[in-house]
Image (cartoon, rainbow, N blue to C red; front, side):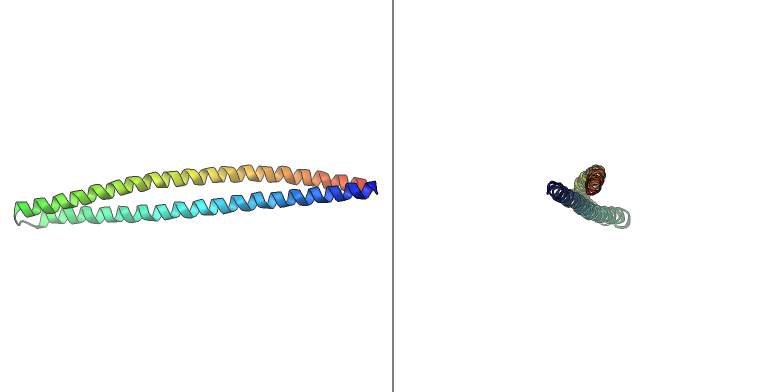
Length: 139
């Protein structure tokens, strides 16, 4: 009777530890996947903004080199493109900061995953010790 209560208590604790272990692993994987997705979305936006900046810079250069129309027209066009370049550079700076934050969050999640992995190993060792105790009690 006492032996069966100890066995049942041990089984319940083993099951509880296994559930906790699974939850920690799943939460960690989910968070890393989410952060990776965010990071890649920001990376894509950054790439697009960089391409747009290059196009605008090339366009500005063409305007400055190819058109010999009135200086006023050239000045206005170049000024408008300078404004566009400044706006794009601001967007790119913001995206760079977002990319750095996302990368930092991803590194943090990987660190948390490593800690979770260590915790999982500890829980696994506790589980093994409990199973050994149960086997000892069974004998």
